[in-house]
Image 1 (cartoon, rainbow, N blue to C red):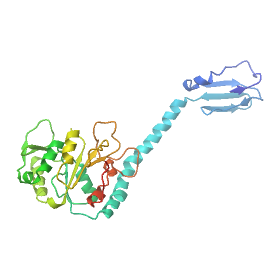
Image 2: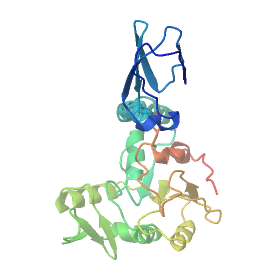
Image 3: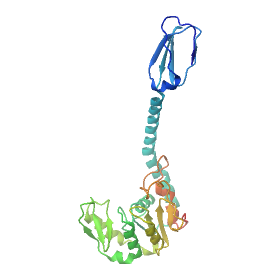
Image 4: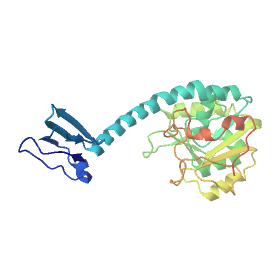
Length: 287
């Protein structure tokens, strides 16, 4: 660490072993000879007063690194919050709108992912599956018998366990999570149901909310040409599945309409699936 001659005075303090310096944020001052050779180390700051006194401050390297990491994290979080929305609006969505050729789309989805995709593309909501969610089994029931459920009258249950309207359509439940009242939910449901074009049906489901492998197999058998289920793992036996990376350590897909962690390009998790190409009838699903 240091080589020195005889001190100019009686004061002399031995430096601690270097291995312990991280835990000793103290200041050492002692006189030195003129021929002292100082070998500074990255975790120290050294000051020399004239030619006889050295002050060496041992810096807690761990605390120093933690401070730097906190600053870096704050910068990254600020970029994540501010840059991603700008990139999505001005780059991602503009490119997808330019790529989109087919605009005759009636999209049925069991949660908000479908409505978010349509919103990104600036398309009208030509089905009532907007700002709501259904359990996968109920959603498949609807798709299996669309014409029947289109004719059913929407009713509501009074539920204390949900802070939003819960609708009943024959034998299925519909959770209007982003609606303020039953009146609003019923009005939007009926208006958008009348817009449905059964010749241009696209069906989107997400593996969550109790979606079992048996339900996915049932989804795979639906008599619909354009259908896809977004999954948190790769399922070779489900031909209509598309694997969304990022949720392998969970038991289902997370919120796919959120920005992908640690990136700043405006990408949602569901952007891994080329939904624009799907609407254009040009997507082959990953098995």
